[in-house]
Image (cartoon, rainbow, N blue to C red; front, top):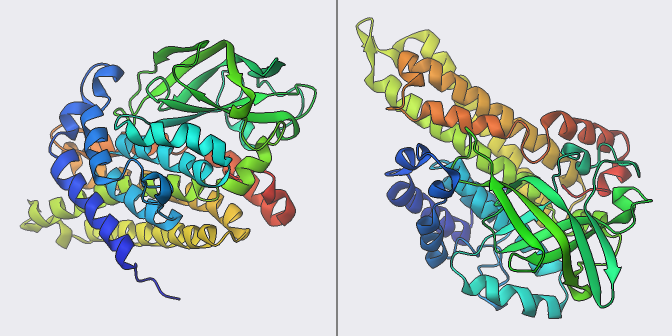
Length: 402
């Protein structure tokens, strides 16, 4: 086994690390405290990331993107999240959907949707899944016809009429390109009767609602929006009617690994800050890192972060090779990384003592950010239940791709 990164991966890690140090970190705490979600959207960072090729990291090379593999996106995601998790999530939403751009779209769909996305330096993507009545259910834990998933798409002439609402959606109300999950046959389970449509934000009938104010990932948006007799052409349907589950299973291999990598970056940032503090802070006549209680916490933090990263990289390696075990391992990697990051951030706050809750230090922000991934991208409990199902019945792991 070779854990050495290749030249391209090292290059992208360097680009992302430099961006984090020179662009994100100098201003992130100020931006985090801006009062409204609309003010906090880092449009200037998005444009700057676009110039470096990070916004289009996953877009196929023939359309002007980098065509990066899942492993590279995990590496870049961790680096950006070490500066700010919200910004990393904005980018990662684009990267997740880039798998669909590359592999699930027809050539006609690629020509229709990819060039405008690449040309617009502020364009981001979003997947409209979560609804008021369906959160982690839609990840496959509960999937009966009566599931409270209400967005429908009904055939209407040369297209479909979509009606419904979405809530808490990442990049919601700021994205330019949406992938909307609907029920084209409400009499069936979501797996058998669900369909995904590409819906540009300027489509008539698509209406933004509001940003949710929150304590975590504050530079990223979570929005509620509505589709009211939103007419989309039939050619905007991805893969085929009723094939939502196939699209997720076959074309979104890296979703969980990428999510895990971003939250891991938050834990790493907290550890690095606490380590620096422990070396400089003197109590009891010596730097606190010389006290066994602090030293043991830092060693545990380093141990857990390294183990979580190894699991993420293994998952990414398997996903890049389309190995089926990547599905179950990805679920476990997401749970492990989120719980690791949260505990590492908690320990960082403890190491800083009273400073751990002060705004002059970033660790209280790291803890707030890490908390979001205990439920983001599927609650950890649902992810564990799905992983257990995959262990008991490997064939079932293919039903849902993320």
